[in-house]
Length: 263
Image 1 (cartoon, rainbow, N blue to C red):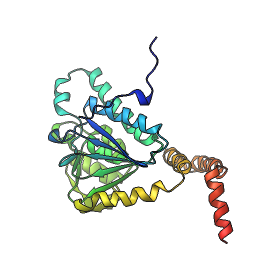
Image 2 (cartoon, one colour):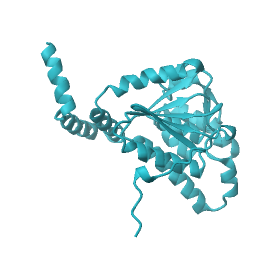
Image 3 (cartoon, rainbow, N blue to C red):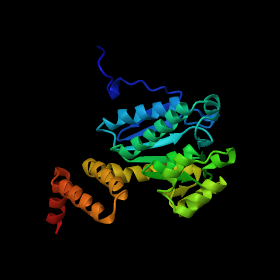
């Protein structure tokens, strides 16, 4: 019987997704610029595998999700979708894409989207599911499936958890683009800078995270998303337990002791 694969055994197709490490920061780069970095089935699998590899790497503290070329991602591969005719085939595609989005949310490290260009449909969904996002001034965002007769239902899940309901519905029903400044105003991205300053700004953001306790960051990220989906009373119960567990960890004990000594 063949032993099950571990994350270290998984080979990533670098023509789809390039995985690089630079100290505590890892970068996953969508690598099909001439096709506008579609979220094809193979690319989805490559991203899921890459995240699994990084999840078990204790040296990696932040993951940057980037893309080559002018577009961040144009969403699902329309050539692939055009060749698919079965309901089961589409169910498998959209279910697996949802599993990728949940993998980002469950990833112990924060995932930062580096949005240098257009992000549409599932590409916009990918930005929305990242924990943080930094965009260049010339980035644009849309959930434009409606223009093809296809309501962006799965991107709507992520979009509606980032911006207000009516703003999300306007984007979903019109398919119109919003610019980077509007995306920041609505809460889809955290920061907007000129393209030439994009990497420096992401570097500053990542640097402010990597110095924090990895235990606190991982536990805090998990709690943050769990409590969002509950009522307020249940959220406080979850948060109290999470803080209590965090407070007895060695990182927190050292931090508290160092602070009290300063006083």
